[in-house]
Image (cartoon, rainbow, N blue to C red; front, side, top):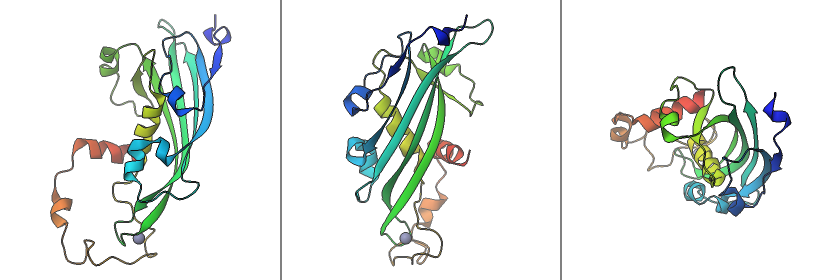
Length: 193
Ligand SMILES: [Zn+2]
């Protein structure tokens, strides 16, 4: 029997506080969409150089259960993000608009142990540990933060280097030679995938 046909699909509220407590242990799937402005995303707001009108992110979430032979049905979560934020251009040190459009897929697993055992080489989907109060707002924030460029810049040739930015004086070369931390490498991999 296909469980999809019997499970109810629940509409997610677009209210940011409701997104902080979503029950992924309940036998139901979800769908929903909405818009979050930058101030509604406190950790993203910290990265923003300025907030112009219209800055923020449209999000779209849909979950469904899959069934592979011989195993429990698994809930798959698809997240779409599209929006704009302003960051400081590292060449001219002025505001630089950045448009993001991301699609991510996750598998909801029952425990941390199951998440740890999840195959690392699976870059199509990542595990999320189920909870009765899952924080979807935090997930949306995490994915936006992971999508931001490490060194935001205007397109090549459209701005001039600020005097204090590196490249001219060689200052900052120390920073470039630092061994890259694994988190940043992961960020780059995700960005290029
Ligand atoms: Zn610039």
